[in-house]
Figure 1 (tube, rainbow, N blue to C red):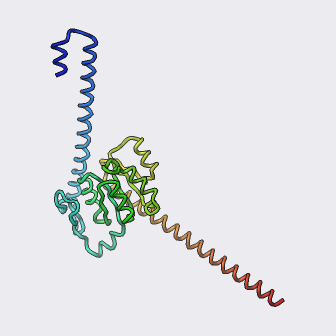
Figure 2: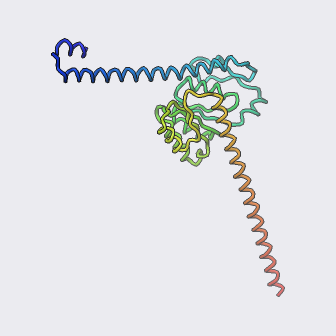
Length: 251
């Protein structure tokens, strides 16, 4: 309408046409950016769906979960249970997944449900509360979420004495170096961009949990060695004191 108005009601004027070209340029930029973000979102969703279908095509076994086992539109439905013997050997650790996107939450649940106990949260505030209550072995969180974003949630987790030791993986579509550096500065242990490779994510989760267990064992051993040294020092001091008193009494 603006274009028609200027063409039909305005005489040739360089300033008028300059304003018109500026308006058209802004309009085209807005349209192109809108198309870019729409296709980027579709690309992420299609990548997730393609990966899910690939997981479904793999040979299944009794302990394998497929997407058809999850009722549509329900993330709270109980997943098929693995045998008790398998649960004891596999589900020794707990993951907290903080993600506001329903499909991605279900997909992460599909990836990790056979190996880990899962806690689910839809935003950073809920995730931080569950982290303090459940103290999971590892946290996977999105960044852009309502109520509280992933950056703030990660900061609170790393500043809290109860949860500061828990590894945090930021899983997000933000790709700028500024966002990556911000996540690392807030204490995140890893930064994975969407769309992600599920095998790489599994491997990083296992590696972080294992490294924390190894670090815990080192501290426990160091503490036990220090304790033994202290006990030996106290015993030696007590013996010397007794010997010294006996000598004084004899004299």
